[in-house]
Image (cartoon, rainbow, N blue to C red; front, top):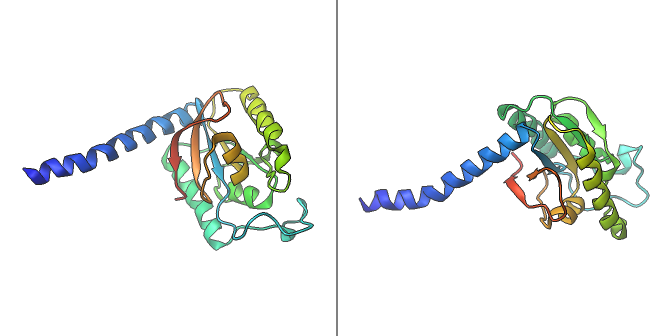
Length: 185
């Protein structure tokens, strides 16, 4: 009997986490929330000096692990019934490649998701612009955003791991608290 009670005490918190995530996934499917994720694993920090957005070879890019994480994100989205989300991405190659390797549809570059790592003074204004633009999008379909650590931290106060996703309620607000945190699959 003690073992059964101990097992219940251990599993009870896990069941609420699963239920919370289920509600978050449902909100995403219904367009009442969005998935904001950090690009998949791209070793290093920032970008090399003199990088160019139009030349991926000048940027920090996904490695094999990152490409695999992105593919698994696509599988996870499909398993949650999210086949063709509206998919918006930073214009950095590692974010674009994360989004495209998910194989969930056309990826749309979205400048408000671009990294401001090199210009932190732009962070507050860019975050406000991201919130404004996202809240002006038509509601209804699932929305997946691929961005960078600095952007996600500015919006939520959370320092996400590479490939981590946050499901956030809509309309988007400053210091958004996640409905769920999803680790890189």
